[in-house]
Length: 129
Image (cartoon, rainbow, N blue to C red; front, side):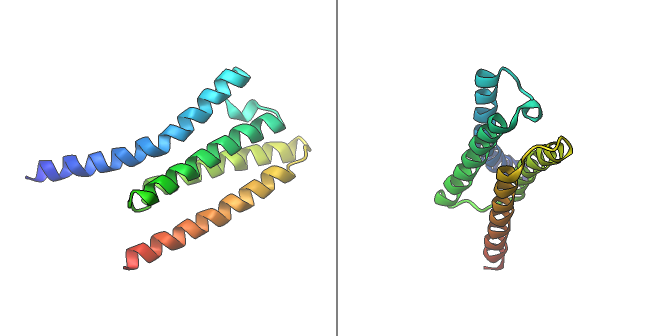
């Protein structure tokens, strides 16, 4: 019976990974079709912002879908959130070193940080119940 429980647990985890990976995959398909590259770091300002907004909005839509389906926000969600945030930080550092305007990216990252904190508060409140 243990193997059955582990199999069901793995399916549950894989469902969350699949739901979160879909917007990431779609944003990279957009990146390849429109800009003919897979590397988002090499993009210029407005092209990177379009890609990054598609990535963030798609990911938050997947988080919202999980909440609608009654799923809990897990560590997998935070791993995706942190990886998306780190992509923005890397691009921000590159823009600062090249002395480019990074105001919009800075605002997006601040909003993303606030949303991460809000999601974390809901996650902690759900664990306490």
